Image 1 (cartoon, one colour):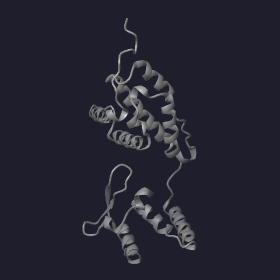
Image 2 (cartoon, helix red, strand yellow):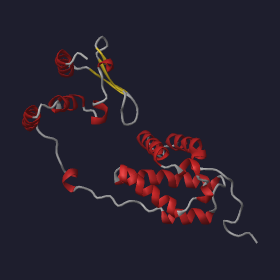
Image 3 (cartoon, one colour):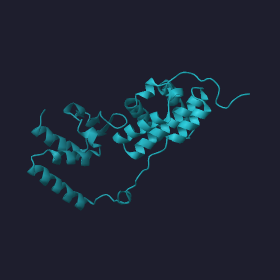
Image 4 (tube, one colour):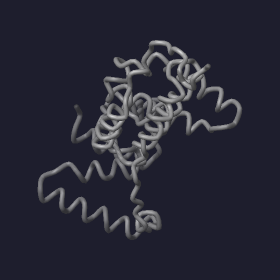
Length: 220
């Protein structure tokens, strides 16, 4: 009698299926099941999982328990948002499916882990979802307020605000920019510490003028 899920499984970690998962993502994108943005998002989640969860690379898949997954979800949620945590959970669930196909995990264990690996509840901010961008006049008032407060505290926050406003970059990318990232001849500004991958933007007139003024005060 063949018992369901009783077939002997292979010994391997989730990390051992990383390349297999990346190929699966590429195929899913090629077939139109997911788009490029989703692929990049899942790759980013995978990178975060590997950096945060030791058992991803050290524990055999067949030995993972609901406790392992609960501990991962708690640790990941402590560092990332609820939606990002759910993205990571989805990626791991997809790798589990590949593990079942490749016989790294039994059907019974897959069902046990999947049932225990619950998604995190996301609290949506209705006001944020319906928020409109400020008008030029409102933005001018906000900028004046930021500069006034930062100036009174001898802070450089006003310059950071202007840089974010002109570049549209994330704050993590902005604070990592150095003068080496400015190519005056090619009229380009380079962001190395980006969310997904490095990118560049043109030094359009307003940004170029801002950078020149900033360089006059901070040549280094």
